[in-house]
Image (spheres, protein in one colour):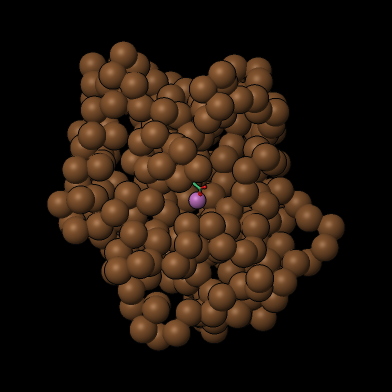
Length: 250
Ligand code: MF3
Ligand code: CO
């Protein structure tokens, strides 16, 4: 299929799709507090996406039943919002959200603390976020895709955390998932050459303990096998001939 290169017009639409998504993330972040359910977050995110005139791209994607993935503590990704799952002080919660604006997809994830959280949890969230920034230092035209993967791996490895291997980042555009796949762990091959106009969703998922994950019986929720905490940080990024443009940053 190959990696699509977006035209200037398509890049403008990607920028706007991503800008609107930052509003959704901001609304959700500001609403987080102990006592709210994971369903409350989905309702707020869904409402905000639609108020902006956009479509939630996760809803019904391969049957996923909600608009926002809400993953608590040892849940890595794809947690299904539930009105009985109540956030408690000290929890960490990963919010993964995306939308479609004029046919163009955006995708971003953040992990937040609920109230006061442990120093260990804070560090996991910080390292996960920083690993993304280490990765995109390599994200420029002429470098190779796996330079990003290798940089994320090299950074995270120092902390002894587990890098999730089963799920990876991806190209994004008129589809949520386009070529290429973007692993967050070291690769033997260099991968395709990066070119200006590629739009990529780069999304390290990092476990405080071992890297291994398993699926719950709902067939969606991914959890750490050892029960350790997990964090997620994702942005949609535009490759240019200079510094990459992080389109979903606010
Ligand atoms: N951000 C996720 C991804 O990049 C999307 C969630 S998949 C869904 O793959 F099915 F839950 F929508
Ligand atoms: Co993604």
